[in-house]
Structure formats: C-alpha cells, structure tokens
Length: 422
Image (cartoon, rainbow, N blue to C red; front, top):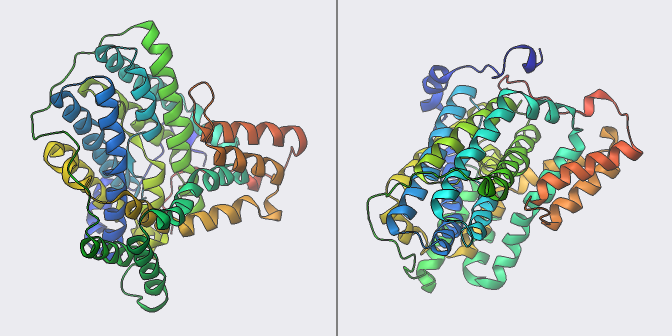
C-alpha cells in the first residue's frame, strides 16, 4: 500500500525490533563500515564548519556548540532511523550547507544566521508533513534518480584516484590492500584493510598532519536566534532546498539502489526536526546524509542487507561522541591526512556507484536521455541560485524526459514504502 494512504510517517518494524537484533548484526563488516563513514564525516567536513565559524568570528564556545549540534543530533538521527526502520539511514548534516553558511556569515551576524537555521528546519518539516517530497520521489523515474546518485557520488571514486598524486605511498598502499583483501581475505572487509594499511603507511612515512584546528576543550556557548526576512531569504530557503534536494535526495537514491524501500516522508520529517533543534543549539542543520548512507548501505557493511543498519548505529555512536567531545577530538582527527580519508571513502562507494550506473542506463528501464542529463548535471557540481547540483540534476533530467521520453512504464518509478529489505 502507498505510504501516503497510511499517514504522514511510513511504518517500520520499530526501535524495539532493531535493538533486539542489533547484537547479532554487529560484526567486523558493519563496524568497519560505520567507522569509515564516521572518519569521513568527522574529518574534512568538520574543517569546513570550523572555517565557517572563523569567517563569522565565532568564539571557541560557539564553534564547539555548532559541532555539538550537528554531530550530536546527526548521531541521534542515525539511532532513531536505523533502529526503527532497520535500514542504514544515516544522519549527519549538509556539507554544502556549511559552505553556504560560511559565505553568509560574512554578511549576517551569527544570531540572525541561527534564526535562519531554525527557519530552514521548519521549511523541511512542513515539506515532510505534507508528504510533498514523498510524492515527488514516487513520481520521478528511477533511472533519473540513479543517474543523479552516480553523478553526485562519482567525485568520491575520482577522489580515490587523484589522492594517489597527493600521497602516493600511503594511498597506493591502501588501494592495493583494498583489492587484495577483496580477492583473497574474505573474513576482513576490504575497506577496513585499506584503512589499517593506510594508517600504518602514514605512521611509517610520517604523514600525520599538525594540530592547527585552533579549538581547545571549552564548554559550548549557545546563541539566541534572531529572525529576519533577509536571513530567511538568503540562508533559510537555500539551506532547506539543499537538505531536501541534495542530501535527502542522495540518501533516498542510494537506499533505492540497494533495494531498500526508503521512508521518504519520515526522512524529511526527522531532517526538519533535526534542523530546528540544531538551529536552537547553534548548528546549521542535522539531517539524513547522502555519502555516509552510501558507505553504510554498501556491501562493505556485509552481504546481508537486513543487518547493515548496524553500521549506521556504529556511525551514530561515533558521531554523537565526536559532538560531545568536539573540543578535544577535532584537533586529533584533523591530523589524519585528507588524501587517505578521501581514498578510503571512495573505495567504500565502488559497488554503490556500479549499481547506480547499471540502474540508470539499463535499456529496459527507459528514460536514457533524461538519465544522461541528470548524470552530467550532477557531475558538473554546478550551483545555481545557491542550490547545489543534485537538485538541478533531478530537475533537468525530469524536464528533458518529459519533453522527449514521456510516458514510460510505471515500473521505472521509485518505490518508497517502508518495508525492510530482505
């Protein structure tokens, strides 16, 4: 039955069910996938947030509060969604959103930006409660969604290659370990082998970075929001569009590519609630994360799709811990070399990308022209009106298909009812 006929929020097995079976699904593969996703989310993206805080001349306490909001609530979202739906629906925050805010803080005082963060959460919540996003995702053809995912995530695959030029011995060792482990060592996840060998190479070559994050262990300092029309138009609206049109859309597409029936309305609603709560704490949002959902839902998290939600739980624990101890942990994590982190993240997404390309360009699925347009727009990383490429990829692909390929068989539309994959 269509989720829209059963209420705003798609039903799931329930948190009790997820908790009951969690111990049986916690293993080396789910643990390593959750760890890799957490390292990815707690390294480079954290530096973007710290840079944005510097642009706005925030105090160390305000910066720590920002990190506490986005990582603590992002981890909480992972717990709730993964355990309730028994799917690897992973929470975090919008990385492009942090870049958007960095530019805005040069113009707006931080209290007005905080007010805009809250308003962005309200917009996302309304879109989820009305079911509008779920209806759009059910209407969009599957090849266009999958092409958007391929185009948006391909940069991680390319990043694994370009990282070799930046740190040849370390990244090269990690990549070789990944494929050798995939071929010969079945009991150890290849992504864990890559990470361990990469860290050993870092230690042997002295490639650890220096502690220049500039944050000491201080208490969070919260900022009272101020609500203005200018900040609503310049920050809140673009940020809300980024959440639903980039992050949530990517996560939905990734889950569909892995044959999970994504609960789109619930994902949008909890992203709205997370955005509101994060805003009041001084963070720009807390929502479903595309790249980290891709890592936790890939085959690197185990062959049994029904157990991969445990990877998201592991990620949530690490994310929440990172937020709580941000002042002490950030400088340590940022000492890890960026090329190694990027390479391991790219390796973890190989099978997600393969499935996305296969689904996007299967002749039987149709919508090939629209899918190609979505692919190249997503790969372009273009930002128009402050809105990032994944949104425009879906829009452009749908418009082109409507002009030259519509209608097509109903089976090419995504299915988003919330029955656990099995």
